[in-house]
Image (cartoon, rainbow, N blue to C red; front, side, top):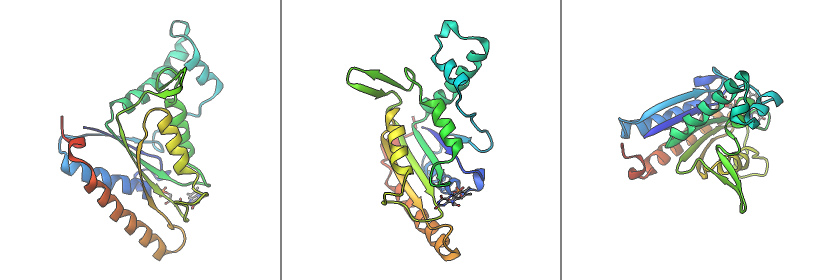
Length: 209
Ligand SMILES: Cc1cc2nc3c(=O)[nH]c(=O)nc-3n(C[C@H](O)[C@H](O)[C@H](O)COP(=O)(O)O)c2cc1C
């Protein structure tokens, strides 16, 4: 089993979302000692913003790409290959200014590639990164889950499903900025949910190959 953990907190591994992701990964690895873990820290190793030059490199025919464009495409290809190799994707997802971290958006902009991670067909777009399970650990200062103000859950579902990753579970740690008591309660509840989720994982799904 290959696990890809993507941390998108500006605090890297010290973020609350990263901590919950760590807890979940630790439980998976305890049950699957042969599992291979790759950690992508988007704060320590940020993906550049997508701009017209980079997008132009994606669109250029392989044989026409300049050396600079080849470097851009190779970088995106490497991010996509890392995702392709993953059986399980674990995402630490903070809420910043009512949205996802800009580093995560930049990452998505480099892995959402027509003809590579999705394709257009007569019947509409089809995602190509199928057969993966995704676990999202969301940390928020306030309370949003289950309300129309939760911009992240539908967005993450839409984007990941678009590239073929539609099997997604969310765990929320909320109220982290309301008071110390609220923070402790939000984290404690989320940690219980992490344990429940890790315990509910179907064994064959995580059998070591
Ligand atoms: C720059 C910044 C913006 C934030 N914006 C929001 C927000 O819009 N709504 C909210 O409920 N919490 C907000 N928060 C609180 C974070 O969601 C909370 O601290 C959470 O723990 C962040 O996840 P992390 O610890 O993994 O980085 C913000 C925090 C920071 C640092």
